Amino acid sequence: MTSTIKVNTVTTESGSTLTLGESGKTVTLASGASQTGFGRTGTVDWQTTPKTGDFTGANGEGYFINTTSGGVTMTLPSASAGDIISIQDYNNTFDSNDFIIQAGSGVKINGGTAAGKLILTTEGQGLTLIYVDTTVGWRSIESTTFNTSSILPAYITATGGNTVATCGDFKIHTFTGPGTFTVCSVGNPAGSDSVDYLVVAGGGGGGAGCTSWNAGGGGGAGGYRESAGTSSGAYTVSPLGSGVSTIPVTATGFPITVGAGGAGSPGQAAKGSNGSNSIFQTITSAGGGGGGSQDGGVQIGNNGGSGGGGGQADNPSPCGGYVCGVNKGTGNTPPVSPPQGNPGGNGALGPGGAADGGGGGGGATVAGGNSPGQPTGGAGGAGATSSINGTPTARAGGGGGAGSTTGGAAGTGGGGAGNGNGSGRAAGTANTGGGGGGGGESPSPTGAAGGSGIVIIRYKFQD
Image (cartoon, rainbow, N blue to C red; front, side, top):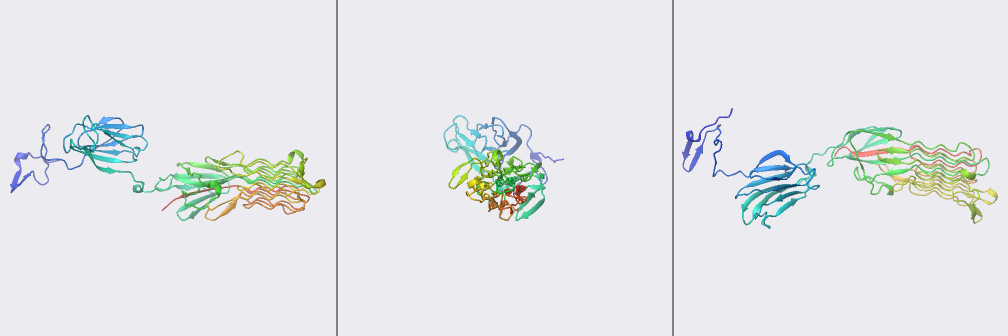
C-alpha cells in the first residue's frame, strides 16, 4: 500500500528550498486539482494500444502507429509552449503505408506553412515533437529509424540429406537420392531466412547402334538449375546461376526428388530413355533427352533438359562427301530462364552408309557436337561448374555420340563417351546428371545409361 500525505502536514524550509513530503512517501494532488510550475520531464506517457486509424493526439502522450493495413493520420491538438507528443512505427511498416502528422488551422510544423503536414515513410521511424511558439509551431527534436543491425541475428536450422557438411559459417545438405529437407527454424534477415540451391536432373540414355557400323546419339544432360550463391557465402557459380534469387523457406518439410538416369537403348535400332526430373520446392529440372538411334523414325534425339544427340542420318541431304541429317533433340524443354540446358548434335552418314556417326548429347552450357561427317561421333556438350559444396565441381555434361571408327568425347561434367569401333561407350557418372554414351557396332550396339541427378541446399547457420 502506498503512503500518501497531505502537503500542508509535512513541509520543511531551508534557505530558498521548500520540501514537500518525506522520504519514502508519495505526494499526490486531489482528483480534479490543477498544478502549475512543476513542468514535464521531457517524456511522454506511452499508450500501448497501437493506433490503426486516424486520430487526434494529446499533449503528454506517445503513440505506436500500425500502418500494416493502410495509412494513418494524426492531427495535432491545440497547444501551449512546452506541450509534447511522440510517435513510433509499431511494426516497421511506414515504408509500406505512410503515417501523416497534420497541424491544425494556423499552426506550423518546424516553421513551415500553417496547417502543414509531415509525411513519414521510413521503416521503423520514431519522432518527438514539442510546441515552441507561433513562429515555429511544433518542433521535431528527436527522430529515430529502424536499423536491422540492432536485431539479434537468428539462423536457419534444418535436417535432411544423404550428407550434411559445414563450410565456414554455412551448412550444405546434399541429396543423392530422394528425401526431405526439414526446416526446424526459419531465422531472420539479420541472420538467414533463405537458401541457395543446385538442382540437376537425371541424364538421358544413349541411343543404339547396330551389329555393324551404325551409330547412336549420345544422351542429353539432365536439366541444370542453380541460384547465384550470394546469400550463403558468395561461392563461385556457373553463368546459369548469375542473378538467380535464393529461395525463402518456412518451418516445414520440403520433399526432395532426385531424378534417375535414363536407360540406354534396350536393343538395336532403339532410342535411349529420358532421365527423370529432380525437384526442390518451386524448382524443377527436367530429365535429359535420350539419344537417337540409326534407323528411320527413331534416329531423332529426344527433347529434354538438354537434348539427345541424333543417330546416324537417314534420308538426309548432301553434306560435302557425306550426308547430314537434322535430327538433334531440343534442350531447355520445358523452357525456363535462365535455360537449363542445350540441344544435342546432329548425326551423319558416310558414302554408301559405311562411315557414320551419332550426334553428341547437349550439356548444361554447350550444345552437343554434330558428327563431323566422317566415322566419328559428335562430342557431348560441356556441363556447368559450381562450388556450392565448397569444391569446384562440373556436372550435367552430355554423352558422346557413337562412331563407326571413333566415338565422340564425353562432355565435361559426368557425360559418358560414345562407342567407337565396337568399344568404349560409357555411362553418365552418378549424381552428375551426365548423359550416356551412344552405342555402335557389336559387341556393344546398345547405348549407355545416363547418370542420376543431385540436389544441394546451402544456407548460413552462424556468424
